[in-house]
Image: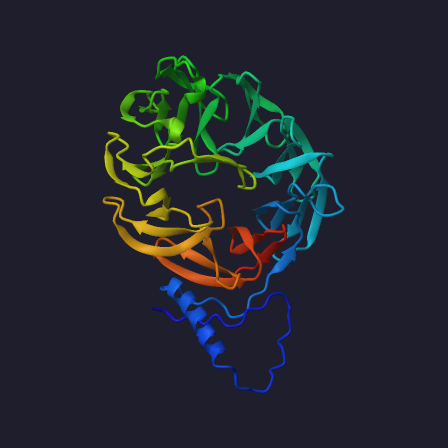
Length: 454
């Protein structure tokens, strides 16, 4: 067990207090301090100590603010409550010193939905009128904040740096358009079926468009040109379109027929591979786990979350399945390699399979698993991952301490190690890392910026 000296942590430029003359403390105080330190040490076995003195730069933001790190700039958008006395806005700050660069007010009544960074210095942000109305996306010059163009719809970036826009109608149909990110001019457009569109993701965006009609007809198209690459039929028509399920994972197209079966087809040839009994209405979700396929099935009850804030909109425990837990499948045959109901999710990170236990509050146990057997080979401890992007390095974990502060650590699944980075006052709920710069959001919307190496 490593011994970690947490010390007394300060923030900002707080001066060192004058040391009072030594005095004899009551016997109970050292005992309480030792017990508290023991709790921290026991939960951080295997960690390495972080720096003794930490400072961050504060950047303003409204409650629920969202942000994006883009090169040496921090882009901040006000959340639902905005900043007191100001209209909701998008603002840019230089990293890591937090110097203001530009501000752009949103239209009156609009709420910000999200950011997308595009090549050649283009920043896209999506917004919509509060409570109703279709979203629109605005492209700005990330250096100056100057508006370049505006389009209706929510933007989806493509692998080659382009942009897709989905425009939906009330009946579920709509139009899919490919747009030049520099000018906003349309490159191509095509109709979307009622079941909508799904995508295969590359490293930097969509690299295949997949359209599935209620009849079972499938079209696979190139996102750059919209050109049809292949077409075929993979399923029979179903009565309940709301129960239809489509997902692309790797080179597989997965479709659910409603009664409780998911069928896999090869994306290149649309050839049928295998079929397994899984009811997609019960929260089933597939993901890539190295050379295997992960299947996550819901626990009792479901939650609908806000995609921007992660807050729960509603819950319903009448919707559940007895198949809670995870399964690892052979992607060629669909056969189950192993199952484990101890984990609510599986992640493939840095060549390691990470199991996520049932959350206790907002924290969950993280363990490294053997992909062949599911056996636990290492433990990272109980953490709440503070970022949404598991490709970011380092991974940042947060843990609430008994005294109300939060422990911040870097998690390394490749080695199974954790490294304490800071002990934070107040409550922080979201972090992101780019090029060593760490940005975290406090619950009141204030952002903290930690330079590289701190």
